[in-house]
Each structure stands twice: as C-alpha cells, then as structure tokens.
Image 1 (cartoon, rainbow, N blue to C red):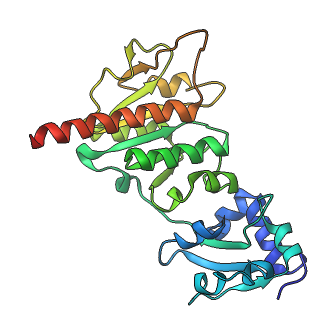
Image 2 (cartoon, one colour):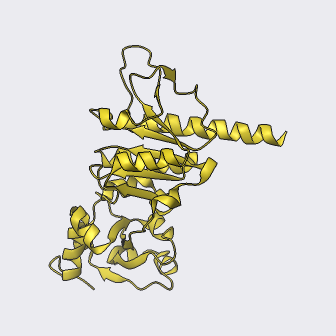
Image 3 (cartoon, helix red, strand yellow):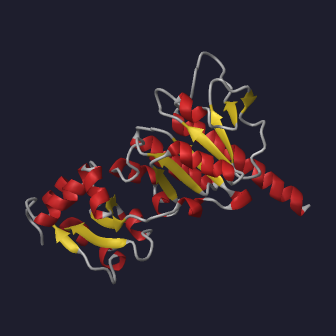
Length: 265
C-alpha cells in the first residue's frame, strides 16, 4: 500500500492533475469515481488507484475484478484527488486521438466549434450536451481551455469517452476545410438577423461559439456562412456559452428528428 505523497506515482498523479503540459507529454488524463471507471472504453485504461477505505466497501472487489490496481492510504488518496469528497477510485486513462476526417460524416455532420472558451465546466457541459444532441464532434482552437482539465472531465460525465474531438492549430483553415466539404457554418452572433430556429440544419452543419466574455473574434465570425441570433427578452444581452450551444445543437436535433419522421410517413 502506498502511504506517502512523496511516492513517485503519487507525485506523477499530482503533476497530471495540475499541468496540461504534463498530460499532453504523457498522453494521459485522470478520471475519478466509480461511474467514470466503469465506462472507460476497452484499451484506454492505463492504471487504477483505490483508497483503503474504498477497498473495504462490499462492491469494491466485484468492481475491480480482473483489473490490476494500487492501494493508497486514505490520507494520501485525498491529497491526490481533485474532489472535495473522493469516491476512493482514480484512474489514469490514455488520451484518444482523432483526425478531423473522423468528425465529418457527410449530411449527418453536426459539429460544435469553440473559440477560446475558458471555463472548464462550460467546455465539459458542451461536450455532454453535444452527445445528447447527437453531434459528430467538437472542434477547439489552441487557446480553448484544456479538454482534459479535471473539472472539464467531471463535467462531461463520461461523454469524453464517446464524443470525437479535434484541437486545431489553424482555426480559420479548419473552418475553410469544413466549408469545402459542403458543411454550412453558423455563428451565434449579436449581428445575426435570422433567429436561430429559422435556417435548416438538416444537412451538414457546424456552430461557432466564442469566448465567454468576448464572444467570437471578428476574424472567425467573418468565416461563417450566416449569422444567427438567439432572441432575448427583458434586459438580458446574452446567454452562457454552454446554454447557447445547447439551444443550437438541440434545434439541429429537433429538425433532423422531424425530417426523419416525415421521410418515414
């Protein structure tokens, strides 16, 4: 049993928890909790650490059956955890790798493109909501918060395992490539003249969502095929970035469900 936070494995976990650079260098990220452990795709699991308290739970042996793991004292486990009340199981998971082409699925393409979103919770919520709405992937520029930040991972509630992603060095170039592949790109923008539920998103579609405080840069917004806006009542000027993204993604989902139903009738 590991009883010291000075143990090299514990120091490495702390580095992975705190530093995006370390996560990228090792190609690993942390997930905590039983649900996130049980949903890890085959071949992604790198290593597992459990607290002595967790190991004493009745379901622990069943949950860990066939899995190699390290036992950590309760006090040391709490020091490496990113949560206030750790569940007692922490896994290191290998980062998946995707190409842009794997996010593009012809007429079915449904993408969220985020520019410089800074809040980990927002990004994780977008991915989770995106899975629910049926997106084929999420594209991020380099200045967007790290997708593998522990808070982002928690906010995805497991969607990190199932939603393809692509981090681009050249956001403008990536958007141009999408347009070459007949994917319509929409910018949620205050200058939009169309309400968000007016265009047809039945064909390949992508939505641009900008930074929480500043929105999209002019350079990125100008690459859109159309500006759309979400109507505001009262004195509200804008919505949370994750909420705006949810409205657009679910409007696309609604239109596509309606289209499938009409084609079946």
